[in-house]
Length: 161
Image 1 (cartoon, rainbow, N blue to C red):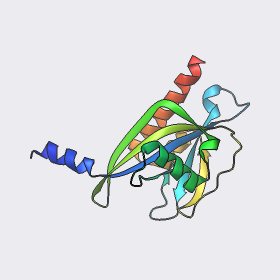
Image 2 (cartoon, rainbow, N blue to C red):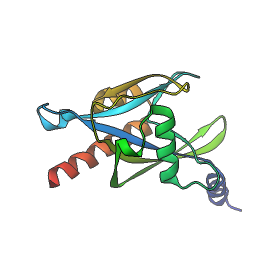
Image 3 (tube, rainbow, N blue to C red):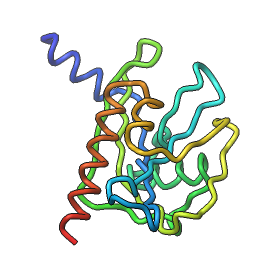
């Protein structure tokens, strides 16, 4: 087995997690790019990093079901609060404690920008943040790129309307 095949095999056995990049559009703000805010949750464990809602895929669960379940569990936002945006899926690959992890993010808009976030005990704080603040909070380069890609996708969809 080559090293490339070994790495591919390792990633196929990776921990898999799914979540949503949740955003809201603020009403009455100008200019339009300033209307978009992203939801980030601060963990109550470890280094208290900031991340969008996500979690491990349960046996027999598909990716979308996992993302919806985890967003409901971690932020109190269920399918009734979200509009899943087609055409955006972003995958991250990294290691956690020496083991490969794969995280798949979809994009979802909060239907009512005033909907309250209810945190689980896995998180100690949350913040709605515009792109640059969200990237500063996220710290990890791959997460920052995911947020930027989500922002570009939302703007492109907006420009089509």
